[in-house]
Each structure stands twice: as structure tokens, then as C-alpha cells.
Image (cartoon, rainbow, N blue to C red; front, side, top):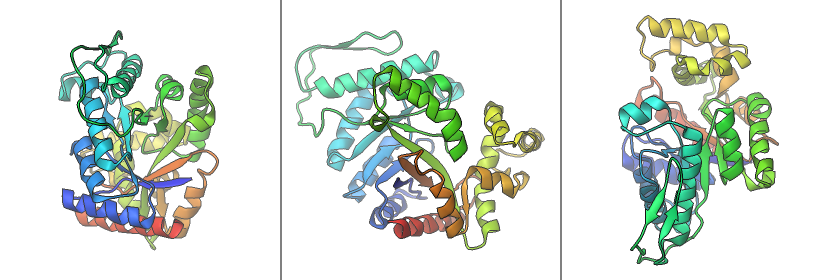
Length: 339
């Protein structure tokens, strides 16, 4: 499996330094999210701070930029990184799209599929002066009188899609170069609930399993004292457990009662980022890569034969910066040992 990393930094300078350290340790891809920063701006910082590791967005919201804007940013980032860029996209949830960004979210599976088609078409054809027309029901491209005057590094930039639900997962298997899991994704859940949908999508498009890079996202917390590692990661588990949408996921892992308790604490007024105390250690152990270095290595091995790539990220929910910084240092040490 490829070991990749999502660096953290309180400043952009620290983010760049963490990316360099992870690259030097052996991380093959460096991923940046979009929430508190722009994914594309963060990717640009990493592209200039590193020289070997690929740079990916995990993830950029697909609908909050036009397909043409996303394609232009992907082309620029691919140039800036010397052909190392991966465009990771996701639909996001309704509230993020409609309330935070004021954009449509209806029919997200079809909208994301058509958005990817528009982006790929633009990247492949923007150097010609012919009209670029993609007639989609939810995402379209009608560009005339345009020709990009700059050279491009690649006419095909890899597109990875984040997907959780069955319909979106099947679609990712049909059209994406890679699939990115939710941050909570156990080996058993990947094997029994997610890979069948990806394989169905691959088969429907006449593709082989090797055509899709299966990327597992994993919150990772390492400490010689496992209880300390669990407490660092507990806030992230509590954050997602506070969301009723994930009820089936927690029930699958036999954690329905624990989730119900967390929801109760959340509804009583505790912030979603301050639920760590309501999360028991066995819940953290089941859903994250947490514990001593040896324990984390053993848990990591559980993805062998299922995932092609593992994306490690440090916990951040409800933690002071120093605790996330310490968690990051331990992960980069582990990457170096594995490499």
C-alpha cells in the first residue's frame, strides 16, 4: 500500500514545513482539505514547498466553483507542481452547498458526474480554438472563442472522488481515477459495504480493479501511552457521532448505543468539537488508527489487500494546536519507519 499524508499547519509556513518533512519521510502523496482554508491555495503552497510527492485535494467541493474554474486551477496546479497534481472532488452536503455557498445541490450524483465530464473535456481541449461544448442536465460547458495560450503539462489530470453513499460510490467506480473514503473507515466496513459498490461501478463501465486507486482516509493518533493517543482522536469520533446521518455506520460497528449517548450530550448543549469526553476508548479503537506505534502498524496492516493507498491525518477536533502538532510529529516518524 502507498502511505500518504494530510499535513497540518497553524500557518501556511508550518503547513509547508510539515509537507516537506512528510515528503522526506517517504509520503508518496500530500493531501489538503477545504474548510478553514482553500484547498487549491493550500495545494499551491505544497507544490512549491516539495519536489517529489504528488499533491492532491482531499477534497475540494465540486459545486462551489464552476467546472471551468476548477479546470483552470487544476491546470495551474499541475504546472506549478511539475505534473504532480491530483484533483480530489466531493459533493459535500446540502447545507454546505446551499447555505454556505449559495449553490444548487439537487441530484448530487448526476451533478458530480457531469462536473467531472466538463472538467476533463476542458483540460483536454483548452489548447485548441474549437468550441468546447458539453451539454449536461446539471453541469454544462459552452465555451466559444477561447484558446488557452499557455503550455500544459498533462492533457489528463487524475480525478479522485470522495463517496460514502451507495449511488455515489458506484458512480466513483464508473468514472474516477481514484476513490477517497470518509475519515472513519474500518477495514471491515471497506470490505463489506464500500468495495462491492466500487466494483459494481467498475464492472458497469468495463473497467478493471487496477483502474481505480482506492484511498482509505484514516485519523491517526500515536503515543507510547495508548490512552493518550485515544483521547487525542476521541474528539473527531465524537464530532461525526453527533451527526444522525452516520447512524447506519455506527450501528454496523455495534456502536449504536454509544452514538445515541453522544447525540444526547450534543443536544444537551455540548459543542460538536467538544464531545471527546463522551467517546469511550473502544469506540476510538474501532474507528481510528490510534495507540502505540506497534498497535498502529498492526491496525494499518488490516487494510492490506483492500486499499491501494492509506491517507493518514492527525486529529484536530477539540485539540489545542500543540496537541495536533505532537500527533503530526508521531505520524511523520511512523511514515519514515515504514518507508
